[in-house]
Amino acid sequence: MSGAGPVSVSVSVSVMRTEAGAGLDLPAYATPGAAGMDLLAAVSGRVELAPGTRHMIPTGIRIALPEGYEAQVRPRSGLAARHGVTVLNAPGTVDADYRGEISVVLINFGESPFVVTRGTRIAQLVIAPVTRVHWAPVAALPDTSRGAGGFGSTGLG
Image 1 (spheres, helix red, strand yellow):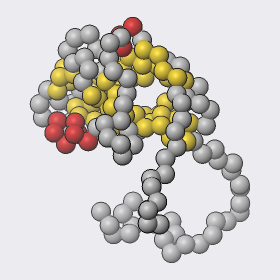
Image 2 (image 1 turned 180 degrees about the vertical axis):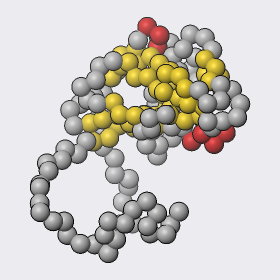
Image 3 (image 1 turned 30 degrees about the horizontal axis):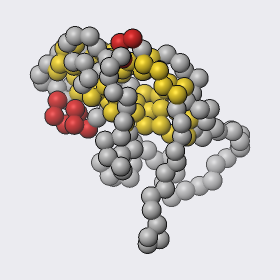
């Protein structure tokens, strides 16, 4: 498909800042090809994450996703690579019917304390469509060459 441009979908999402989020930038895409938007810490002071500790960090935003969408809270690769800091429940899911503040549970797997201050880019937010499953109970599943092998059964990794 030479000459074909990227396929993307645009969706409108209502957003409100909390009192703690006043003055912070809204999540934004850093580059035209980025899938995730940076979430910023809406803390009033310093939050120190000692090695091995976790803390829930507010982002200062509340959103109203359209039905049929979710928001995924994902780690930032730079924080993980440089500091060992990641999102504990990655990816975190924000459901379309949730109206509370988005918070991020950060954990420090690194060897040094990590300090979060107001405006620190702490995670990414990816908006994605949701697929609804309708179970079809059967007596047997079709065979595959892999079968029931899992957890390293392919010999890769």
